[in-house]
Amino acid sequence: MKKPLVIGIFCALGAVIIALGVYAASLDGRLERAGYAAAARGSAAAGELAGALAGLDEGLRAASYSADGAMRSYLCARAASDAAAAAAAMAALPGSTQELEALAGYINGAGDYALYLSRRAAAGEEPSAGEAETLKELSEAVSGISRDMGGAFAALDSGELRLDGYGEQPGEGTLGSALAGLDAALGDFPKLEYDGVYSARDAAPGLSGAGQVSEAAAREKASAFPGVGKLVSRGLTGGDAPCYCFEDGDTRVYVDGEQGRIMAVEAGEPSGELPVDAEERSLELVAELYGGEFTRVGAGATGSGLSFAPVEDGVQLLTDTVSVGFGGDGEICSVDASDYIMYNRERDLSPELTAQEAAGRLSAGLTPLGYRLALLRTDGGGEALCWSFLCSDGEGGRVTVSIDAKSGGEVKIEPYQS
Image 1: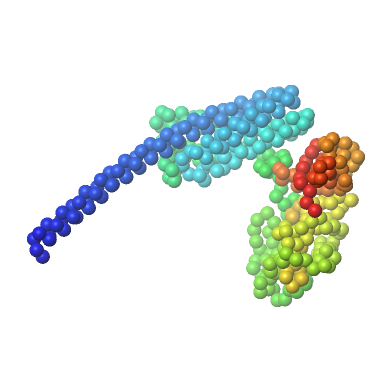
Image 2 (image 1 turned 60 degrees about the horizontal axis):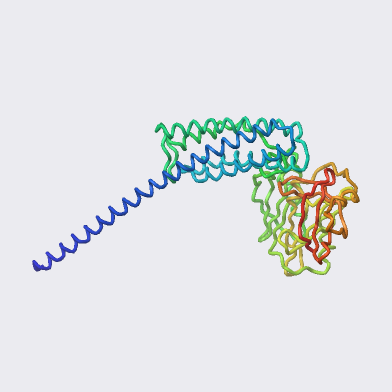
Protein backbone atom coordinates (compact mmCIF):
# COMPACT_ATOMS: atom_id res chain seq x y z
CA MET A 1 0.00 0.00 0.00
CA LYS A 2 1.35 3.42 -0.91
CA LYS A 3 2.39 5.71 1.92
CA PRO A 4 0.09 8.66 0.92
CA LEU A 5 -2.91 6.29 0.95
CA VAL A 6 -2.05 4.95 4.41
CA ILE A 7 -1.70 8.49 5.76
CA GLY A 8 -5.09 9.38 4.24
CA ILE A 9 -6.78 6.40 5.85
CA PHE A 10 -5.36 7.22 9.29
CA CYS A 11 -6.41 10.85 8.91
CA ALA A 12 -9.94 9.78 8.03
CA LEU A 13 -10.10 7.41 10.99
CA GLY A 14 -8.82 10.13 13.28
CA ALA A 15 -11.52 12.51 12.06
CA VAL A 16 -14.17 9.85 12.70
CA ILE A 17 -12.85 9.20 16.22
CA ILE A 18 -12.81 12.91 17.02
CA ALA A 19 -16.37 13.29 15.70
CA LEU A 20 -17.55 10.36 17.79
CA GLY A 21 -15.89 11.85 20.86
CA VAL A 22 -17.59 15.19 20.31
CA TYR A 23 -20.95 13.44 19.82
CA ALA A 24 -20.46 11.31 22.95
CA ALA A 25 -19.59 14.38 25.02
CA SER A 26 -22.65 16.17 23.67
CA LEU A 27 -24.89 13.16 24.37
CA ASP A 28 -23.48 12.80 27.87
CA GLY A 29 -24.24 16.45 28.53
CA ARG A 30 -27.78 16.10 27.30
CA LEU A 31 -28.34 12.98 29.40
CA GLU A 32 -26.96 14.76 32.44
CA ARG A 33 -29.27 17.72 31.85
CA ALA A 34 -32.18 15.31 31.36
CA GLY A 35 -31.28 13.64 34.66
CA TYR A 36 -31.30 17.01 36.42
CA ALA A 37 -34.67 17.83 34.86
CA ALA A 38 -36.10 14.46 35.90
CA ALA A 39 -34.85 14.97 39.45
CA ALA A 40 -36.40 18.44 39.50
CA ARG A 41 -39.72 17.06 38.28
CA GLY A 42 -39.55 14.32 40.90
CA SER A 43 -38.83 16.80 43.70
CA ALA A 44 -41.70 19.04 42.57
CA ALA A 45 -44.06 16.05 42.42
CA ALA A 46 -43.01 14.98 45.91
CA GLY A 47 -43.81 18.46 47.24
CA GLU A 48 -47.18 18.51 45.51
CA LEU A 49 -47.99 15.06 46.87
CA ALA A 50 -47.14 16.07 50.43
CA GLY A 51 -49.38 19.14 50.20
CA ALA A 52 -52.29 17.26 48.63
CA LEU A 53 -52.13 14.48 51.25
CA ALA A 54 -52.13 17.04 54.03
CA GLY A 55 -55.21 18.67 52.46
CA LEU A 56 -56.96 15.29 52.09
CA ASP A 57 -56.19 14.46 55.72
CA GLU A 58 -57.53 17.81 56.92
CA GLY A 59 -60.69 17.63 54.78
CA LEU A 60 -61.63 14.11 55.88
CA ARG A 61 -61.02 14.92 59.54
CA ALA A 62 -63.08 18.11 59.38
CA ALA A 63 -65.91 16.31 57.54
CA SER A 64 -66.06 13.67 60.28
CA TYR A 65 -66.71 16.47 62.81
CA SER A 66 -69.29 18.40 60.77
CA ALA A 67 -72.96 18.30 61.75
CA ASP A 68 -74.11 20.59 58.91
CA GLY A 69 -74.99 18.94 55.60
CA ALA A 70 -73.86 21.84 53.39
CA MET A 71 -70.53 22.15 55.19
CA ARG A 72 -69.99 18.38 55.12
CA SER A 73 -70.71 18.34 51.38
CA TYR A 74 -68.14 21.11 50.81
CA LEU A 75 -65.48 19.48 52.99
CA CYS A 76 -65.91 16.07 51.34
CA ALA A 77 -65.78 17.62 47.86
CA ARG A 78 -62.58 19.46 48.80
CA ALA A 79 -61.11 16.22 50.14
CA ALA A 80 -61.96 14.47 46.86
CA SER A 81 -60.19 17.25 44.95
CA ASP A 82 -57.09 16.86 47.13
CA ALA A 83 -57.16 13.09 46.55
CA ALA A 84 -57.19 13.65 42.78
CA ALA A 85 -54.26 16.07 43.12
CA ALA A 86 -52.35 13.53 45.23
CA ALA A 87 -52.92 10.78 42.67
CA ALA A 88 -51.73 13.08 39.86
CA ALA A 89 -48.59 14.00 41.80
CA MET A 90 -47.95 10.34 42.57
CA ALA A 91 -48.09 9.52 38.85
CA ALA A 92 -45.26 12.04 38.28
CA LEU A 93 -42.94 10.50 40.89
CA PRO A 94 -39.96 8.48 39.63
CA GLY A 95 -39.46 4.91 40.74
CA SER A 96 -41.35 1.69 40.27
CA THR A 97 -44.93 2.06 39.04
CA GLN A 98 -45.78 -1.19 40.77
CA GLU A 99 -44.83 0.27 44.15
CA LEU A 100 -47.04 3.30 43.62
CA GLU A 101 -50.09 1.64 42.06
CA ALA A 102 -51.46 0.09 45.24
CA LEU A 103 -50.84 3.26 47.23
CA ALA A 104 -52.59 5.30 44.54
CA GLY A 105 -55.53 2.88 44.78
CA TYR A 106 -55.96 3.71 48.48
CA ILE A 107 -55.83 7.44 47.77
CA ASN A 108 -58.27 7.20 44.87
CA GLY A 109 -60.62 5.13 46.99
CA ALA A 110 -60.53 7.71 49.78
CA GLY A 111 -61.32 10.47 47.28
CA ASP A 112 -64.15 8.57 45.61
CA TYR A 113 -65.72 7.75 48.99
CA ALA A 114 -65.48 11.42 49.99
CA LEU A 115 -67.19 12.42 46.73
CA TYR A 116 -69.95 9.87 47.42
CA LEU A 117 -70.55 11.38 50.87
CA SER A 118 -70.47 14.87 49.36
CA ARG A 119 -73.28 13.96 46.96
CA ARG A 120 -75.26 12.40 49.79
CA ALA A 121 -74.86 15.50 51.93
CA ALA A 122 -75.82 17.79 49.04
CA ALA A 123 -79.03 15.78 48.66
CA GLY A 124 -79.82 16.36 52.35
CA GLU A 125 -78.99 12.79 53.41
CA GLU A 126 -77.21 12.13 56.68
CA PRO A 127 -74.43 9.53 56.72
CA SER A 128 -75.38 6.24 58.32
CA ALA A 129 -73.63 5.13 61.50
CA GLY A 130 -71.47 2.81 59.43
CA GLU A 131 -70.57 5.54 56.94
CA ALA A 132 -69.68 7.96 59.73
CA GLU A 133 -67.42 5.33 61.30
CA THR A 134 -65.80 4.58 57.94
CA LEU A 135 -65.13 8.29 57.44
CA LYS A 136 -63.31 8.45 60.79
CA GLU A 137 -61.28 5.32 59.99
CA LEU A 138 -60.47 6.73 56.57
CA SER A 139 -59.31 9.99 58.13
CA GLU A 140 -57.02 8.09 60.52
CA ALA A 141 -55.60 5.96 57.69
CA VAL A 142 -54.92 8.95 55.43
CA SER A 143 -53.40 10.79 58.39
CA GLY A 144 -50.97 7.90 58.83
CA ILE A 145 -50.12 7.92 55.13
CA SER A 146 -49.56 11.68 55.22
CA ARG A 147 -47.37 11.42 58.33
CA ASP A 148 -45.24 8.58 57.00
CA MET A 149 -44.84 10.09 53.57
CA GLY A 150 -43.97 13.42 55.18
CA GLY A 151 -41.18 11.62 57.01
CA ALA A 152 -39.98 10.07 53.75
CA PHE A 153 -39.94 13.46 52.03
CA ALA A 154 -38.07 15.02 54.97
CA ALA A 155 -35.47 12.25 54.68
CA LEU A 156 -35.28 13.00 50.96
CA ASP A 157 -34.61 16.69 51.65
CA SER A 158 -31.93 15.88 54.23
CA GLY A 159 -30.14 13.48 51.89
CA GLU A 160 -30.93 10.32 53.85
CA LEU A 161 -32.96 9.09 50.88
CA ARG A 162 -32.46 9.69 47.19
CA LEU A 163 -34.94 9.78 44.34
CA ASP A 164 -35.17 6.62 42.26
CA GLY A 165 -34.27 7.00 38.63
CA TYR A 166 -37.09 6.63 36.10
CA GLY A 167 -37.42 2.94 35.32
CA GLU A 168 -35.12 1.99 38.24
CA GLN A 169 -36.21 -0.69 40.68
CA PRO A 170 -36.41 0.69 44.25
CA GLY A 171 -33.29 -0.12 46.20
CA GLU A 172 -32.15 0.51 49.75
CA GLY A 173 -31.96 4.19 50.62
CA THR A 174 -34.35 5.31 47.88
CA LEU A 175 -37.77 6.98 48.06
CA GLY A 176 -39.20 3.98 46.20
CA SER A 177 -38.12 1.60 48.96
CA ALA A 178 -39.74 3.84 51.57
CA LEU A 179 -42.99 3.91 49.59
CA ALA A 180 -42.90 0.12 49.20
CA GLY A 181 -42.61 -0.25 52.97
CA LEU A 182 -45.51 2.15 53.46
CA ASP A 183 -47.71 0.20 51.07
CA ALA A 184 -46.94 -3.05 52.89
CA ALA A 185 -48.13 -1.46 56.15
CA LEU A 186 -51.56 -0.48 54.75
CA GLY A 187 -53.26 -3.82 55.32
CA ASP A 188 -55.62 -2.20 57.85
CA PHE A 189 -56.90 0.44 55.42
CA PRO A 190 -60.70 0.48 55.91
CA LYS A 191 -62.81 -1.49 53.47
CA LEU A 192 -65.16 0.86 51.66
CA GLU A 193 -68.74 -0.33 51.26
CA TYR A 194 -70.65 2.18 49.17
CA ASP A 195 -72.01 2.79 45.68
CA GLY A 196 -68.66 3.37 44.01
CA VAL A 197 -65.93 1.76 41.95
CA TYR A 198 -63.62 1.23 44.95
CA SER A 199 -66.26 -0.56 47.00
CA ALA A 200 -65.32 -3.84 48.65
CA ARG A 201 -68.62 -5.38 47.57
CA ASP A 202 -68.82 -9.05 46.63
CA ALA A 203 -67.80 -9.40 42.98
CA ALA A 204 -70.19 -12.33 42.44
CA PRO A 205 -73.02 -12.14 45.02
CA GLY A 206 -75.07 -14.63 43.02
CA LEU A 207 -72.52 -17.33 43.92
CA SER A 208 -72.56 -18.44 47.54
CA GLY A 209 -69.27 -20.32 47.50
CA ALA A 210 -71.06 -23.26 49.05
CA GLY A 211 -69.43 -25.93 46.94
CA GLN A 212 -68.34 -27.15 43.55
CA VAL A 213 -70.01 -29.41 41.02
CA SER A 214 -68.03 -32.27 39.53
CA GLU A 215 -66.61 -32.07 36.05
CA ALA A 216 -68.84 -34.99 35.03
CA ALA A 217 -71.97 -33.10 36.12
CA ALA A 218 -70.78 -29.97 34.32
CA ARG A 219 -70.09 -31.98 31.15
CA GLU A 220 -73.59 -33.47 31.25
CA LYS A 221 -75.07 -29.97 31.47
CA ALA A 222 -72.91 -28.70 28.59
CA SER A 223 -73.79 -31.73 26.42
CA ALA A 224 -77.49 -30.86 26.71
CA PHE A 225 -77.01 -27.60 24.81
CA PRO A 226 -78.54 -27.87 21.31
CA GLY A 227 -76.11 -28.81 18.55
CA VAL A 228 -73.22 -29.82 20.82
CA GLY A 229 -71.41 -33.07 20.03
CA LYS A 230 -68.48 -34.77 21.74
CA LEU A 231 -66.93 -32.41 24.26
CA VAL A 232 -63.30 -32.09 25.30
CA SER A 233 -62.65 -30.61 28.76
CA ARG A 234 -60.26 -27.67 29.10
CA GLY A 235 -60.46 -27.68 32.90
CA LEU A 236 -61.72 -25.28 35.53
CA THR A 237 -60.98 -21.57 35.14
CA GLY A 238 -60.17 -19.23 38.02
CA GLY A 239 -61.54 -15.78 38.88
CA ASP A 240 -64.58 -14.55 40.77
CA ALA A 241 -66.84 -17.07 39.00
CA PRO A 242 -64.87 -20.27 38.27
CA CYS A 243 -66.33 -22.34 35.46
CA TYR A 244 -65.59 -25.48 33.46
CA CYS A 245 -64.71 -25.01 29.80
CA PHE A 246 -65.64 -27.65 27.21
CA GLU A 247 -64.91 -27.62 23.48
CA ASP A 248 -66.44 -29.29 20.45
CA GLY A 249 -64.54 -28.07 17.42
CA ASP A 250 -65.11 -24.31 17.23
CA THR A 251 -67.83 -24.44 19.90
CA ARG A 252 -67.04 -23.61 23.51
CA VAL A 253 -69.43 -24.13 26.43
CA TYR A 254 -68.73 -22.68 29.88
CA VAL A 255 -70.50 -24.13 32.92
CA ASP A 256 -70.32 -22.42 36.29
CA GLY A 257 -68.40 -24.51 38.77
CA GLU A 258 -70.69 -23.93 41.74
CA GLN A 259 -74.20 -24.81 40.57
CA GLY A 260 -73.58 -26.34 37.15
CA ARG A 261 -75.43 -23.75 35.04
CA ILE A 262 -74.39 -22.76 31.53
CA MET A 263 -72.62 -19.42 31.83
CA ALA A 264 -71.71 -18.87 28.18
CA VAL A 265 -71.69 -20.51 24.77
CA GLU A 266 -69.48 -19.45 21.85
CA ALA A 267 -70.24 -21.14 18.54
CA GLY A 268 -69.44 -18.51 15.93
CA GLU A 269 -69.80 -14.81 15.25
CA PRO A 270 -73.27 -13.31 15.75
CA SER A 271 -74.85 -11.85 12.62
CA GLY A 272 -76.37 -8.38 12.38
CA GLU A 273 -79.65 -9.83 11.09
CA LEU A 274 -82.10 -11.76 13.27
CA PRO A 275 -84.59 -14.39 12.12
CA VAL A 276 -88.26 -13.44 12.48
CA ASP A 277 -88.74 -15.90 15.36
CA ALA A 278 -85.55 -14.89 17.19
CA GLU A 279 -87.33 -13.58 20.28
CA GLU A 280 -89.60 -16.61 20.61
CA ARG A 281 -86.74 -19.09 20.24
CA SER A 282 -84.49 -17.14 22.58
CA LEU A 283 -87.11 -16.95 25.33
CA GLU A 284 -87.72 -20.70 24.99
CA LEU A 285 -84.01 -21.46 25.36
CA VAL A 286 -83.48 -19.05 28.27
CA ALA A 287 -86.49 -20.47 30.14
CA GLU A 288 -85.19 -24.00 29.55
CA LEU A 289 -81.68 -23.15 30.80
CA TYR A 290 -82.49 -20.92 33.76
CA GLY A 291 -86.21 -21.23 34.55
CA GLY A 292 -88.50 -18.45 35.71
CA GLU A 293 -89.96 -15.53 33.79
CA PHE A 294 -87.87 -13.43 31.39
CA THR A 295 -88.71 -10.46 29.19
CA ARG A 296 -86.90 -8.88 26.27
CA VAL A 297 -85.20 -5.63 27.26
CA GLY A 298 -83.09 -4.72 24.25
CA ALA A 299 -80.15 -5.69 22.08
CA GLY A 300 -77.56 -8.19 23.25
CA ALA A 301 -74.18 -7.33 24.72
CA THR A 302 -72.60 -7.26 21.25
CA GLY A 303 -75.45 -5.27 19.72
CA SER A 304 -76.19 -8.11 17.28
CA GLY A 305 -78.51 -10.26 19.39
CA LEU A 306 -81.25 -9.99 22.00
CA SER A 307 -81.05 -9.33 25.73
CA PHE A 308 -83.49 -10.70 28.30
CA ALA A 309 -84.02 -9.81 31.96
CA PRO A 310 -85.59 -12.00 34.62
CA VAL A 311 -88.83 -10.66 36.11
CA GLU A 312 -89.53 -11.08 39.82
CA ASP A 313 -92.61 -9.62 41.53
CA GLY A 314 -93.14 -7.39 38.51
CA VAL A 315 -89.59 -5.99 38.68
CA GLN A 316 -87.32 -6.26 35.64
CA LEU A 317 -83.83 -7.22 36.89
CA LEU A 318 -81.71 -5.33 34.38
CA THR A 319 -78.60 -6.23 36.40
CA ASP A 320 -79.06 -9.95 35.70
CA THR A 321 -79.52 -10.12 31.92
CA VAL A 322 -78.97 -13.02 29.53
CA SER A 323 -77.91 -12.29 25.93
CA VAL A 324 -78.57 -14.57 22.95
CA GLY A 325 -76.89 -14.17 19.55
CA PHE A 326 -77.74 -15.62 16.13
CA GLY A 327 -75.38 -16.59 13.32
CA GLY A 328 -75.76 -15.89 9.63
CA ASP A 329 -77.55 -19.25 9.22
CA GLY A 330 -80.29 -18.13 11.61
CA GLU A 331 -79.22 -20.53 14.36
CA ILE A 332 -78.34 -19.60 17.93
CA CYS A 333 -74.57 -19.22 18.09
CA SER A 334 -73.93 -17.53 21.43
CA VAL A 335 -75.29 -17.20 24.95
CA ASP A 336 -73.93 -14.94 27.68
CA ALA A 337 -75.46 -15.47 31.12
CA SER A 338 -72.51 -14.27 33.20
CA ASP A 339 -74.46 -11.36 34.70
CA TYR A 340 -77.37 -13.62 35.57
CA ILE A 341 -75.20 -16.23 37.25
CA MET A 342 -72.93 -13.78 39.08
CA TYR A 343 -75.63 -11.42 40.38
CA ASN A 344 -79.02 -13.15 40.52
CA ARG A 345 -80.12 -13.77 44.10
CA GLU A 346 -82.87 -12.94 46.59
CA ARG A 347 -83.29 -9.19 47.07
CA ASP A 348 -85.65 -6.71 48.67
CA LEU A 349 -87.71 -5.58 45.67
CA SER A 350 -90.37 -3.63 47.56
CA PRO A 351 -90.62 0.02 46.46
CA GLU A 352 -91.27 2.65 49.11
CA LEU A 353 -92.60 5.15 46.55
CA THR A 354 -95.50 4.59 44.17
CA ALA A 355 -95.04 5.30 40.48
CA GLN A 356 -97.15 8.44 40.89
CA GLU A 357 -95.01 9.68 43.79
CA ALA A 358 -91.83 9.02 41.80
CA ALA A 359 -93.28 10.83 38.78
CA GLY A 360 -93.67 13.87 41.03
CA ARG A 361 -89.86 13.98 41.32
CA LEU A 362 -89.42 14.52 37.56
CA SER A 363 -88.40 17.86 36.11
CA ALA A 364 -91.36 20.13 35.31
CA GLY A 365 -90.20 20.27 31.69
CA LEU A 366 -90.68 16.53 31.17
CA THR A 367 -93.89 14.65 30.43
CA PRO A 368 -93.90 10.95 31.36
CA LEU A 369 -95.09 8.68 28.54
CA GLY A 370 -94.63 5.34 30.29
CA TYR A 371 -92.76 3.68 33.12
CA ARG A 372 -91.47 0.39 34.52
CA LEU A 373 -90.13 -0.80 37.85
CA ALA A 374 -86.62 -2.14 37.36
CA LEU A 375 -83.42 -2.96 39.21
CA LEU A 376 -80.59 -0.96 37.65
CA ARG A 377 -76.81 -0.99 37.81
CA THR A 378 -75.69 2.41 39.08
CA ASP A 379 -72.71 4.32 37.70
CA GLY A 380 -70.83 3.40 40.89
CA GLY A 381 -71.37 -0.32 40.31
CA GLY A 382 -74.10 -0.82 42.90
CA GLU A 383 -77.78 -1.61 42.44
CA ALA A 384 -80.88 0.57 42.76
CA LEU A 385 -84.57 -0.29 42.55
CA CYS A 386 -86.00 2.42 40.29
CA TRP A 387 -89.11 3.70 38.60
CA SER A 388 -87.81 4.34 35.07
CA PHE A 389 -89.86 6.85 33.08
CA LEU A 390 -89.81 7.37 29.34
CA CYS A 391 -90.33 11.12 29.00
CA SER A 392 -90.89 13.72 26.30
CA ASP A 393 -89.15 17.08 26.62
CA GLY A 394 -91.84 18.92 24.65
CA GLU A 395 -89.50 19.59 21.73
CA GLY A 396 -89.55 16.20 20.08
CA GLY A 397 -86.79 14.72 22.24
CA ARG A 398 -87.15 11.72 24.50
CA VAL A 399 -85.21 10.75 27.58
CA THR A 400 -85.34 8.00 30.20
CA VAL A 401 -85.22 9.20 33.81
CA SER A 402 -84.81 6.65 36.62
CA ILE A 403 -85.99 7.63 40.11
CA ASP A 404 -84.89 5.60 43.15
CA ALA A 405 -88.01 3.78 44.34
CA LYS A 406 -86.84 3.99 47.96
CA SER A 407 -85.17 7.39 48.38
CA GLY A 408 -86.75 9.34 45.51
CA GLY A 409 -83.40 10.56 44.19
CA GLU A 410 -82.45 10.62 40.51
CA VAL A 411 -80.28 7.62 39.64
CA LYS A 412 -79.86 7.88 35.86
CA ILE A 413 -80.83 10.20 33.03
CA GLU A 414 -80.21 8.67 29.62
CA PRO A 415 -81.14 9.44 26.01
CA TYR A 416 -83.99 7.21 24.89
CA GLN A 417 -82.94 4.26 22.74
CA SER A 418 -85.72 2.43 20.93
